[in-house]
Length: 335
Ligand code: BMA
Image 1: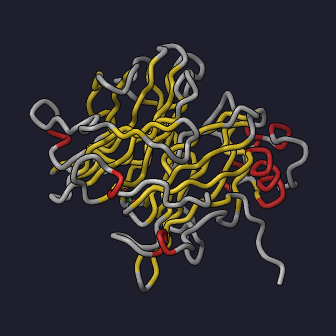
Image 2: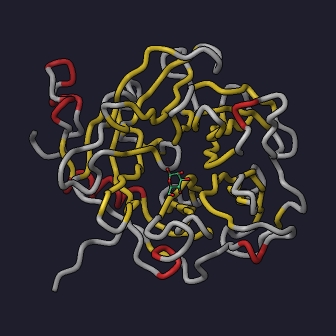
């Protein structure tokens, strides 16, 4: 039997981090944001859930990105419900973007409260102190990340509002990171039998490539025995990131191993961060497995782009004269 092409390879030491590694009592650790610090250290900002069910964020640092983790002795970023009531039930699922013009890291995270999950932003330069910008997208909204640079003078935020018409990925623009507008629907959940029917969301922040912004997104399939969280790929135009150039038809990575299949929420592989190796092509994808532990899978950006050209197409809703075929890289299939 000819198997599907594998684009992400699981690390032999998976899961690379579990609650047992934590220096203080925690229930589970999952869905980490990731970044490479200036000295080459990999920093994961992990979602940590306590026995109340509330989450906070905690930093783990490693020289090689897979073992020897040094974990903060205390929570790195706790919810601050007195000042930010939107964080009453915790803070979850961070994504880190290094903002070129601010020379600081921006963290987009889910702030959870009685109003539901919404999107909040914070800035930091050292992952010790944080400047909170508060809730920028009201509930229900999550799965957010900033682009690292301004587009035509504006900051750009991807996010996933949940409305009666579904759970789709949107892009919004802002002059100052606080006031957001020019909202654009950029990737719709499909319908019916598709693996990404009904609900999609951004996974790690977009990755800038010569061909466009590479997106890894999760699709949620509802089955008789619960949800299946899998990963797919799409590509967006560099200077017009609301324009989807290609979207893969199949998922590329999904729960298969025991640690992904079994846990608090089984059948979940949920990446929130990546780091790029010095070769500029090898990508480390850090993901929460079954909402219980943290795992690593490695792939190649060029292989992902090649796969998208071979297995992707221009989404129907993008096939307007404005986004004519000439804006699509030459090697991609004719629509
Ligand atoms: C999503 C988020 C993630 C979680 C996933 C599976 O909606 O809440 O934090 O990993 O569900 O439970």
